[in-house]
Amino acid sequence: MPQTSSVSPNIPTINLNHDANTDNADALEVPTRPRLVRTTSSLAKSLLDIEPLKNTVLKSHGRPPWYDEDGKQLSDAFVIGIAGGSASGKTFVARQILKSLGSIPSVVILSQDSFYKEHSEEELELAFANEYDFDHPDAIDMPMFASCLSDLKRGRQTNIPVYSFQEHQRLPEKKYLYGASVIITEGILALHDPKLRSLYDLKIFVKCDSDLMLARRIARDVKERGRSVEGVLSQYLRFVKPSYDDFVLPTSRYADIIVPGLENTVAIDLITTHVRRQLDERSRAFRENIARLVPFGRPSTPPGDSIAALQLRVLDQTPQLQGIYTILRDLTTSKADFIFFADRLSTLLIEKAMEFLPFCPKTVETPVGVTAVGKSLDTTNICGVTILRSGGPLEQGLRRVISDIRIGSLLVQTDLKTGEPLLLQVMLPECIRQRDRAKDAYVFVLDAQIGTAATAFMAIRVLLDHGVQQSRIIFVAFVVALAGGLSALRRAFPEMHIVTGAVDGVLAERRLRIGGRKVELAKSRSPSLSPTIEKKLDVVERDMVALSIGSAEMDEDENVAAEGRKIWVIEPGLGQIGDRYYL
Ligand SMILES: Nc1ncnc2c1ncn2[C@@H]1O[C@H](COP(=O)(O)OP(=O)(O)O)[C@@H](O)[C@H]1O
Ligand SMILES: O=c1ccn([C@@H]2O[C@H](COP(=O)(O)O)[C@@H](O)[C@H]2O)c(=O)[nH]1
Image (cartoon, rainbow, N blue to C red; front, side, top):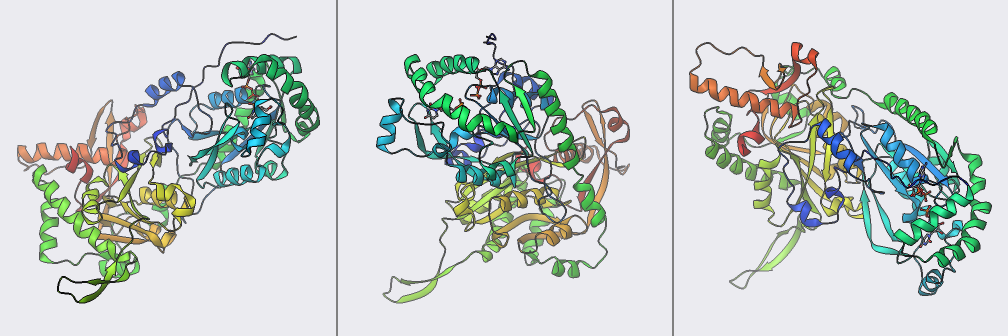
C-alpha cells in the first residue's frame, strides 16, 4: 500500500475579497479606504502564509476587464470540474492547480459539498447513526449546483448554500460569490450530472487506491468532521464504497485527464499550462480599444450638441454653481475650502440625481387640519456604490439627502503594466448582493469624474452582473470630459443616467516618467511660476499620479522609467479630487 503523506501543501492564495464576502452589513456601510495597496511581492509573501478557503473568491492581483467596448461580457469564466472518490485528493489537486497558476486574476474553488440537500428530522437521525446515504447522486441538489455554477461561469453573482458536516445539515445563511475568472469545482459526483458536465471547460478525475482513500478518510473524518472510527468504517462499507463503484468511478470516462491521487505534479503542470494558455487567449486590451473607438483629446462637436447626444443631466449653470466650480478648480484653494465646497456641490448633484427615483403620491394631513397631496419615496432598495477613493467626496451629499442609505464600494486601480483597470475589491450593499433584490434596486454610482470612462465601464458591468437594471443606475460625477470615453460609455449603456455639474472639453495625454520611486509629470511649466505655486503643483502632480495609477505600487520596469507612462487628464478639470479632499 502506498504511504500517505502528512505534509500539507504550501498554498499561495490570499482572499482580498474576504471582507466583501461577509454578510456583515455594517462592513458595507462604512467601506474602508485603503490608502496603500500592498505590492505584488508582499502579496505573494502573504499568499504563501494563508490557507485557501473553499467557496471564496481568491484574488492575487485584481481582475482585468471581462467585457468589451459594448459593455458585453467577452468570455465566460474558465471552469474546471474535478471528480474522484472521497479523500482521493480532489481538494489537494484543486489547490495545487491554484498554486501553480500563480498570478492569475481571481479564482474560486467551488465545493460540491455545499449542495447537499436540506435534511428532515428523520434523515438527520439516520445521518447521525451513519445510516444515511450521502454518496448517492440523489443526496446532492444537482439543479441548484448547476444553476449556481452557471451564474458564476457567466460572470453573474451567486448565493450558494452553506453546509455543515458536523450537523449534517444545510445552514440558514448563504454565501455570496462574485467575480471569479477561474472556477474549480470539486466533488465526488462533479462529473455525474450532464448539465454540470456541459459547464466544464476541463474535466479531471482523480484516481486513487481504495485503501489509501479509506485511510485518509478515517484520519480526516475523525479529526475534522467529529466522527468515530467505527462510524466512518460502517458508513464506508455500507454506502461510500458501493457508491464509488456504482456512480463515482464510472464518471471517469467523461474526464479529459485522469490524475493520480498521489505524486501528481507532472499532471498538475500539464493542466496549468493548458489553463494559462486558455486565459491568455481571453485577455484583451480594453482601455486602448475605447481610445481607438472614440479618439481622446479635444471634442470634435460643439459642447451643446455633445451634451444632448450623450443625454447628460447637467446642473443649471447658475452664477452660484459657477462660483463653486471656480473655487474647486482653483489650485490655491485651501483644503478646508475644498472640502466645504465639494460637500455643497455633492448635495446639489445628488438632489438632481434624485429626479430619477420613483416617488409615489402620498396624502398627508397638515397641522391646520387640511389634507395635502404630495409625494413619498420608499428607500429600501436605494443604495450607493462609491468608486474608491475619488468617489468618496460625493458620499457626504448622498447621506445628507438620504440619511439611512447603504453605501458600498468598488476599488478599481490601473495596472501599471497594461494600463488596464483592475477590479481589486467589491463591497456591495445587501440589496445588490441578493439577486432577487438587485433587479428592484436603484443605485447611485459615485465617482469624481469620467475621463477615459474605463472605471465607469467596470463599475456598471459589476452592477449589471448582479442583475441591477441599467435604467436604475444613476452615475454621479463632479466633472466629465467630452472628448474622453464618455461617448463609448453612453453607447454601451444607453439607459443609465449620468448626472454632473461640469462638462470639460479636453482629455489630455500626459506622460508619467517613473524612475525608481520618483514620478514626474512631463508637462512643461511656465518659468514665471512662483515658488508657492510650484510647490502646490508638485502636490497636485503627485496627486494626479495617484489618480492615474491609483495607490498601486509603482513597478520598476526600465522601459517605462525611460519613456514614461501614458495617462489621461481632464482639462481644465479639478485635479485629483479624492486626494485634494482627503489628503
Ligand atoms: N497528492 C497528494 N500527496 C500527498 N497527500 C495528499 C495528496 N492528495 C491528497 N492528499 C492528502 O489526503 C487527504 C485527503 O485529500 P483531499 O484533497 O482533502 O481529498 P478529497 O477532497 O478528495 O476528499 C488530505 O490530508 C490531503 O493532504
Ligand atoms: O453530512 C455529510 C455529508 C457528506 N458526507 C460524506 O462526505 C463525502 C464527500 O466529501 P469529500 O470531501 O469528497 O470526501 C461523501 O463520501 C459522504 O459520505 C458525510 O459523511 N456527511
